[in-house]
Image (cartoon, rainbow over all chains, first blue to last red; front, top):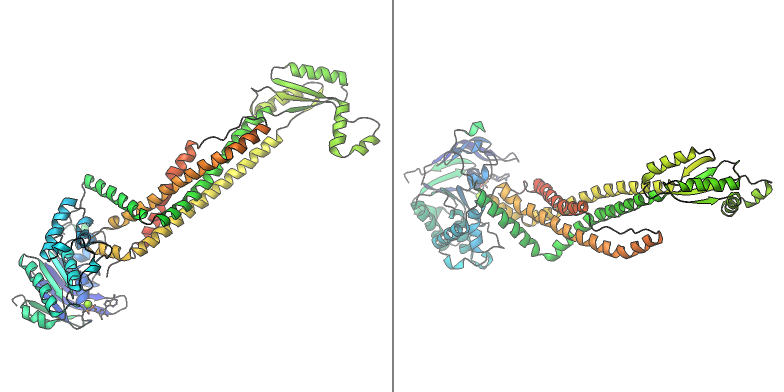
Length: 223
Length: 319
Ligand SMILES: Nc1ncnc2c1ncn2[C@@H]1O[C@H](COP(=O)(O)OP(=O)(O)O)[C@@H](O)[C@H]1O
Ligand SMILES: [Mg+2]
């Protein structure tokens, strides 16, 4: 589902965020991406979501070579990759419902279907009653759930999360991770960047460790 | 494109009905967004309105004056300077002969004495004239062409025919002021055209700048929309519609301004025309001006928005 072949990312500043990364995630696999701050976790996720492009090597997602996608194709690619961020990236002048509906509206889905899907997504993250609320009125954990609902509402085959629990207490963090485990059980491929090693170790999933832009450890698919 | 052949393609929505529906929704929501800040919207639209009204109003005025002068040059008079040898009695016979023509409406004879009188009064060389022992001025017949002789060409032709008379030395058409007026309206028309082009540029800049600010204000929204897979066309659309609505509102304001000015000018112009024995009336908004305003406004708005979007939207990229 996701494959990196000898991938490097050199930023315009000349700094290499990633160098020589090889990686392979099977469809339906779930993995955690760990490593020190500046190790290249965000860079790796950005390459998958085409927020950045690799400067060397090849990235494959869902059977497509991302190097060969034109800029025109990028939006369509992003519809197949749900992205979740530490800072949620919600629109504060729109209700929870409208925030979650955005990926569907953008793809031109009809109103009835949008309503149905958004309700289903709200249900999954346990926020059914908060649909008319504005994000500012929600707690940090709830805002992150809205971000998650928005990422999964269009049922993308791939979900990426960049330090989704970075601002949450251990209890909320565990809940969010369990949510991810549930999505994984229905076949979504997940890659979650985090430096919460303790939590990740307890969940028993594959762990890929980055150090200075290189893969320094991989617990493997079996883990 | 050939290099992508082996890749599985993306499904793109090409249903024309949903496409139309989305456009309708988008245009209405853009209008709704504008109506939520009515003062800003109205001020921008008013500036566009003035910029559109000014050249079209001036154009209509010049157009009216031109029609007016066209109706006047038919009544231009011809001065017939008679041969010096012609006596005052013979001059009266020439006048009668000219008056008998069916292409002449009426005539008036200015005999030698009257011509000298007039010269004394108007030239300021009265005393110099006293020194002459003989009147040097020829008799003059003023002839006004019949109403059906229209335009400077026809009048000039008539003057040539009259000059062929043995007694007539010179037939001079008093068209100069009409021609001068024509030259002036032509110049003003040109100036109006230049003004229109400059103001069209101003409208582009106004709309472009408004949309640029709008893009800045909605920076994070654009980022998120790009993040969840919004195409450039999708992101562009609301801004283009906003430009369109600004232009249309501006056009409406311009029409109101032009019509109000016409109503205000109507009374004075009628009085002025009365002084010149003319039944001149300001025409209502003509089709050309109407279409220019109603078509030009939205078109300029759209173009201005397009320029702003093209320049500034690409710089907004999610991180
Ligand atoms: N936009 C950028 N421009 C220049 N350097 C960057 C940029 N983004 C990240 N980097 C650098 O790339 C390296 C990896 O960054 P990042 O992927 O954000 O690491 P992590 O998410 O693991 O903390 C860091 O050294 C960082 O300074
Ligand atoms: Mg990071």
